[in-house]
Image 1 (cartoon, rainbow, N blue to C red):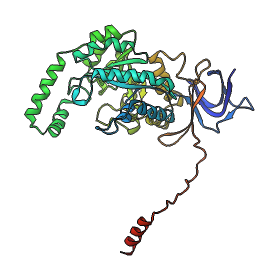
Image 2: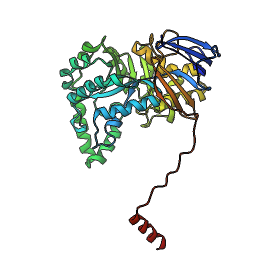
Image 3: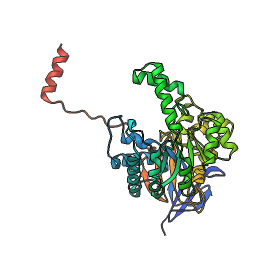
Image 4: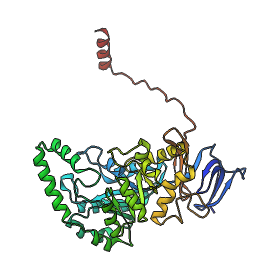
Length: 403
């Protein structure tokens, strides 16, 4: 039997947080005890010991794949460094969002998205943390019908959201798009409105939510992205969606709650005090108890950053970790195995020190196996290295000094 003891830490369980000890046997949590009960074991020196974060929506892979619009890197390289960063930020389960659309102007196609998803499905086998997939699926194009069976067959694809592509209806409003496109397209306002109106008519005439739900419901969790109106939420719910992801208005969030849907908001929204594009603030939705899950959206460090800020705002540690660990596990139907520090669950654990708006992660375990280690408690000034100056450079420097 492979067992180890973690003690001298502040443990967060669904019911309490206190100094305690966790005993892990063969990757499973065997005991969770308040106080020190063993003379042996690893002393975590007062650090927090919490469940690993479960991130149901991350766009971070896009940043590694394409750090500049015209500079794309290979998928294995991008995945490797995303995986490293996820571990360092205390995430033990990450759902990378892949956009399935036919927006050729954005360099996207269904075929390339399917290829990327299949590649990720293979790469995840040797990763530090657990990786699953999240499909942002465009229902406003006939192209989606050709790829539904492929999506159904991807093992790690657990969540699919309707990612409506009718312009000007959701996150970015019509009038905002008019102004933005006038600048980018160098066209007059009437010309831009005519182009937008044509696109709206074309996209609105196609709606394949029905075939998507018929193929994927019961196999994957279905949701909706950027719901803005009550009608958006009602439509998603009618087609088997159980998740409203990043609703942009309080009305949409309220309707999702009325229908018994899960509501997910972005961690950067909470950390920054509001939406970066002027939509619904996470804190305003939480004030009405309309939020169940916090995801990283586009910024891994904000997951722990949100927890730190929540605790500073008076939310208990247990409740704070419900948003980023236990509730996401419940949505995914994985809460019998992960999402909290409880006897019988896998030991997906994170040790860290809390700062003002972030954490310093020192250790990460996945199913009891250590996957990441640093040492935030031992810090010293880095050694200053003085580079040798070549003779020509030295002459140039001497000349500049005498000028």
